[in-house]
Length: 63
Image 1 (cartoon, helix red, strand yellow):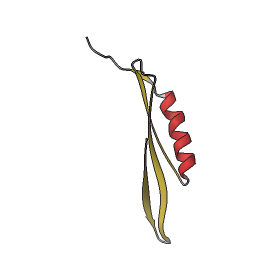
Image 2 (cartoon, rainbow, N blue to C red):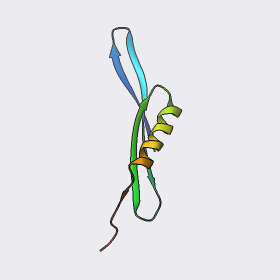
Image 3 (cartoon, rainbow, N blue to C red):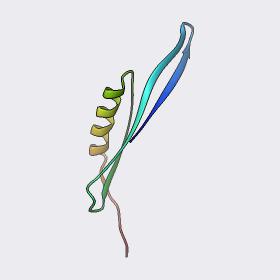
Image 4 (cartoon, rainbow, N blue to C red):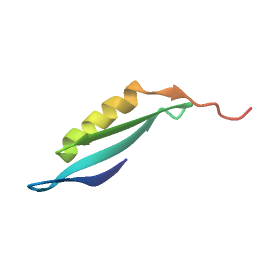
């Protein structure tokens, strides 16, 4: 999990939002990546977890 602040320049000043990157996996060859941007850190993390769980794909390990 990584949280990064991002800023957008407006006429009134800078608008800060938080972008969260979350990787989930089950240890058996399935991983998912979720990215969410929000005004609050907790909202960004929870949204990224949901998106990561929805984007789970199988990963081939070995041959």
